[in-house]
Image (cartoon, rainbow, N blue to C red; front, side):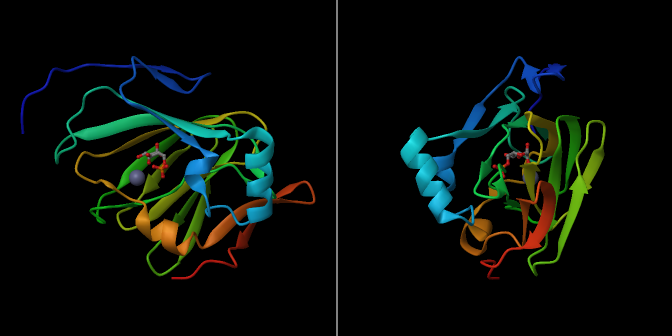
Length: 193
Ligand code: M6P
Ligand code: ZN
């Protein structure tokens, strides 16, 4: 492993951003086609709004993506729903499955959903100050269940990688929806493992 310079970033708790930032990833609804259950609601939003920014990822600058390094970033998920389903991240397994991750809730209201390859599911309310541990082998997705931006800090091994394919193909076992004004966790009728 090559020697890189020590550095720090400053966390803006209110905005959920790291300063300075490296790569910023913006995910729009158009990049999440077929990930939300309600296809009619998806099409309606795409027709009315053209597209919608769902979340942004602010990576710490210039960390090599190799074993031994610790990548880290913040994520901000903007509030809203697609039909009954709350705005969420794509969700992923790590490409190297036995790599763990830590999330720290910063602002807003949201959930961390976890799932194994077998469709075993768990959830953690990622309130501000909550430090959640994502053990090796668990896929993870975050969901904004509030009406303000929901942000959290993440740190994970440099060689972990992202595997989006499994969730794009099979979906996530559980969905977070609004039901009669409340947050409900329900089985995903389209989940196929
Ligand atoms: C967290 C971390 C990142 C991830 C981001 C967005 O901050 O797990 O590695 O990129 O969430 O999630 P996703 O990549 O699933 O869209
Ligand atoms: Zn991850």
